[in-house]
Length: 219
Length: 366
Image (cartoon, rainbow over all chains, first blue to last red; front, side, top):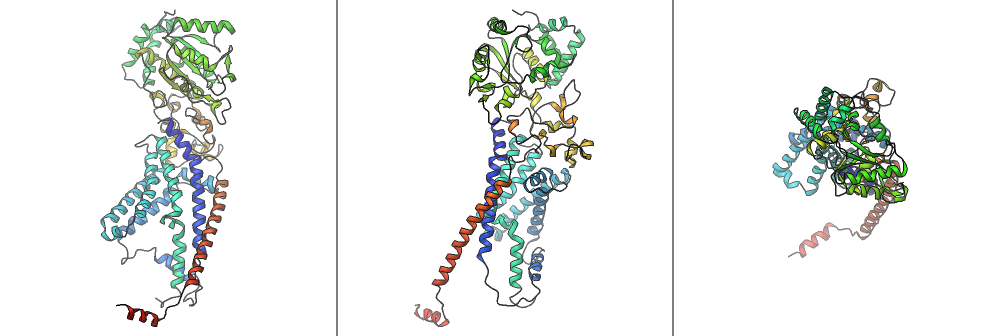
C-alpha cells in the first residue's frame, strides 16, 4: 500500500463519487425525459383487454424462458448473474450503509458468506455469458463493441469487490479504491449505454404489451 | 560519551537476567522473527552501547510521549528508556531553556553520525514561525539534527503524515518529517498515539542488526503494520456473519457485534492494535466498544468522519444529486425540444406517395 493508493481511495470516496453521482443523476433524468418526450401516437384501435392487462402480461411473459427464442444457457446464466448482482448489491452490509446514507432507507443484510458465494456464482455466470456470446456464431454476429463494454462494466465491480473482500491480488486499500472507481465508471456510463435497461426494462415491456393489446388478433 | 551497554543499563535498573532474556524473546516474537532471534537480540544488547537518542517535539500534543511513559512495568514498552540514552526530550529532561538546548547540541556533537533522532509532531513548513523552540524554527532544528543522525524515526501520526495539524484546512502548512528528511534512513511509526512496543521492537531491531526492519511503502515496520485491524479483530466473525451493532447501546453493541456500521475503520487501517493491544495487553479500542478511528493511516482526520462507515463517500450527497437532476431536467428538456423540432420539420417536409407514384417510379427505372 502506498500513499498514492490512499490518495486514490480518498479521491474516489470524495470528488470522484460526487462527479459520478452527478453524471448518473444528470444522465438518468436527461434520458428519461428524452424518452418520455418522444411521445406516442394517439392509439386509434380499441384495447382488447382491460387497460394495463396486456402490459403486465407482457412483462410476465417475456420474463419466462422461451424455447423458441432463447437458449437455456442465456436464460439460466442471464438470470443467475442478474439475481447475483441484485443480491450482492442490495444485501451486502457496506452497500446497505451506502444506500442508507444516499436515500435514507435501510434493511437487514444477508450473511456475508452467502453474499460472498453469490458473488462467485455471479462471476461464473458472467463468464458463461461471455463464452456463449463468443462461441455462438449468431450472438457473435449480432454483438457490437457496446455489448462487450457493458459486459466489462458489469463484471468489474463484482470482480474487484470480491478481490477486495478477500484481500487478493492487491492491497485492500488499492483494491477498494479500484472497486469504488469501477462502480463510478459504471454509474457514469449506465444512463448512456444499453445498461439503462435497469430502469427502462419493465416500463418498455409494459408499453409494448399495451401497444400489442390494440393490434392483431386475440391470441 | 555513553559507553554503558543496553544490558548493563537494564541490569542497573533492577532487571534480572531471566527477565532480560524473556524481554528479548518477546521483542523477537513481536517482530515475527524466528525463535532463535531472541538470543541474538540478547547477545547484541549485551554488547551494544546504549545509543544516544535526540527526541524532538514539534507540532504535537505530547500524547505520543504520554503513551510511552504510561507503559506499565515490567512490559516490553518499559524497556524503551533503559535501551537508549535519552539525551534530549523537552518534556522528560530536567534541564530547561538555554541549558537544555546546549545539552542537545553537546549530545549531537559528541555522537555525530551515530545518534538516533526521534521526531514527534508535524512541521509548519508553510509558516515556520508558527512553531519555534528557543527561537529556532522546527524546520531548521530538524534539518540541523537530521544532518548528524544515523537514522530518523517519525513518531506518531503527526510526524509520519502531518496528523491533526495537517488536517484540512492545514493553517500552518504542516508537513510530515519525510518531506524534510530525505537523505537519512527513515522509519515511520504512526498512530495517535503509536503502540509503545513498536518503537521498542524497532529500536531493538536496529541495535541487533544494525539496520531498520523491513518497511512498507509508507515507511512503517511491516511486522506491525503488515495487516489490517479488521483482519486480526476478534469481532471479525460477526462481520462475516452479518451481525452488526447499529447504535452504541443496542443489543448488537451489548453482544459485542461488529462495529463496522458505527464507523469502524478497521478494514482500511494497518496496525497491530488487535494483536499487541494496549496497557499491557489489556484491551484496544474495539474491545472497549468503540470502532477504530484509523489513526495510523494518512489523513485520517479528513476521512469523512469517525462515525461514518468505512468506504462511504464523503460529504452530503443530496445537494450533488439535486443539482445534477436539475441539470438533467434542463438538458433533457432541451434535447426533447430539439427532437420535437426535428420531428415537426420532418412532418412538414413529408410528401405523401401513392401507389401510382411508386409504379411510375418503377416504369422509369431502366
